[in-house]
Image 1 (cartoon, rainbow, N blue to C red):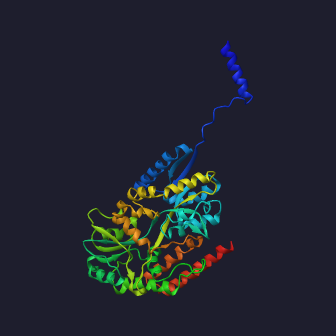
Image 2 (spheres, rainbow, N blue to C red):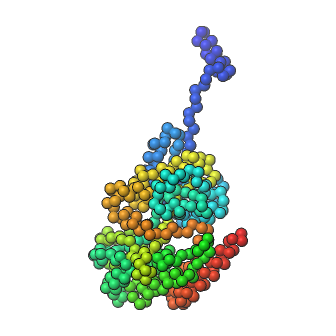
Image 3 (spheres, rainbow, N blue to C red):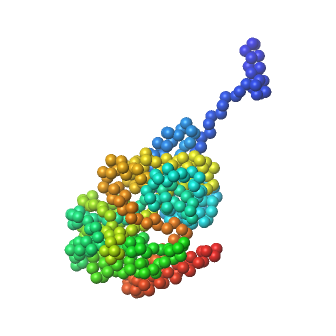
Length: 410
């Protein structure tokens, strides 16, 4: 009876607020991360996320990941994120950044979080790719560039200049036998950009004014046509499948390509990587491929911005970069990781790191989407000898200028 009276009294006192109730458990903040990685890249990312979750369990932050098929990824972000139905953070290359920002309510600005110390974490140029109209919208996670990939059996020492490239390639070319000293997708504007930028050209001038038919761009196309027609070191109309086949069969001594190509190389081929050659025809300036940078972005509608930024910051840390590099076979934008002995000893990682010093961030403005089709048509016309480089680029210039003017009126 005494115990019953004590229990009743306790309930009454608790109801009056005179006895404190037990503190509620800290609410867990679930951060949803979208990405398009597969295989070893996916495994490495999940390992890093597991490390973050273990380190932040006491803070009540937990990250869950969702792998989205790449072909549908960009459209899925555009359709779901502005409506608040998407992830808190997502990983994507910078080429869509400007369009998403202009569309609104997709990517949150993060200038408030980014201090000088954090900026210095990254390889120069990668932060530029995450910046749109002077505002930072993401943290650079990793990058991709094309470089020189060569068959060591055929090319013991890779060329350092375009003159050396042509000399070596001519000796190894036998068109009747289907052998070529060099093979790459020179009709693809993405791959051609290394020459275009090397000659001092580019897609846009001041602001987003198109410059497709600039003298520098014309010279760059004339250069590749010289390799095709006069020097005869390149196969006609090379497809990705043809280039892979030629290299694996020992019928292409050198290739200009990126990290994605390495997974297609046959096991028996002893290959090496080296920086793209400098251009004798451009005063010794280096070929400058485009650099695509995958960034970690915070969704504008996210209700957990602070926690989401902590995740982004961890993903780009030295600790995470080492896992992504050695286990995910990616090239992190984190600069310090390349001082790690294991990373330094990795020839593949080192080669792409060396190449990125001369790379140019691919434009992240919405106008860039209007360049691809006219530029591709121009390259096709030139290769089929339906138009001169100048005439074809003039047509492309008019088309892009018209589309850009139309966009600005909207």
